[in-house]
Structure formats: C-alpha cells, structure tokens
Length: 66
Image 1 (cartoon, helix red, strand yellow):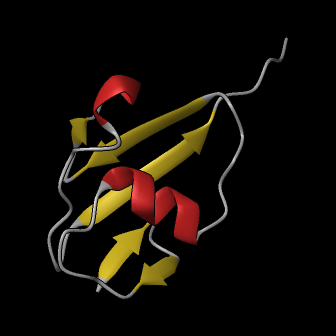
Image 2: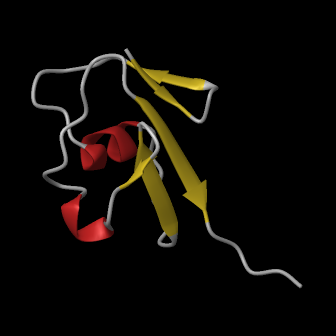
C-alpha cells in the first residue's frame, strides 16, 4: 500500500512510479509538488521515480492567493 496525503491509499504494483500513482488518483492539475518519504521529486523524474510498498507521498496543488 502507498499512502498519499495521509488520507488516500493506492494498492502498490510492481514497477510503480510517481506518475502512475498520480494517474491512479486522477490528479491532473498542472501545478503539483510531489514528495516521496519527504524527498522532493522533480517533475522530470515522475515517470521513472520508483515508489515502493509502504511509501508515504505528499501531492500538493499549488494555488495562487493573496
């Protein structure tokens, strides 16, 4: 199991990547910041960055405010 934002669970699959988790959750917002176990994952690495069973992810939507 992979835990996301302390409230979502995704069943882990062999070869799972950050991008696959994002797709499973249908997170399509363009401005995302993603961490795996507290480590920032740059957007250009999402397709190949491995996610392991038991990992904790944070996926944050960047929004403007003021």
